Length: 73
Image 1 (cartoon, one colour):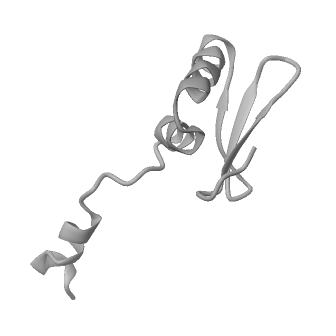
Image 2 (cartoon, one colour):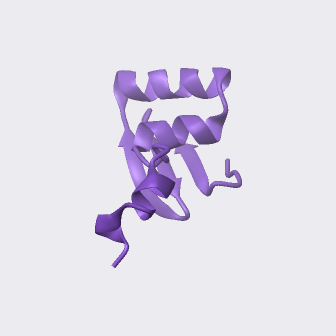
Image 3 (cartoon, one colour):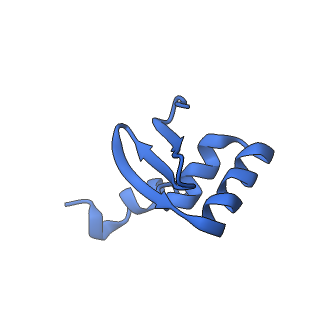
């Protein structure tokens, strides 16, 4: 399952869920965490859920930080 943001996931036979981002491993979930992840996927936007679970999401301050005097070198 792939979306516009590049996240995809694969459920494996042993109960493991592998999340990839643009073809690279982003997270590997097992047991209760994998079950919780799959439950969230059913109720929300899958791309946002995968971004949140892997820690790969924007925090909203990128534009502000770009214009900070320390970063304008």
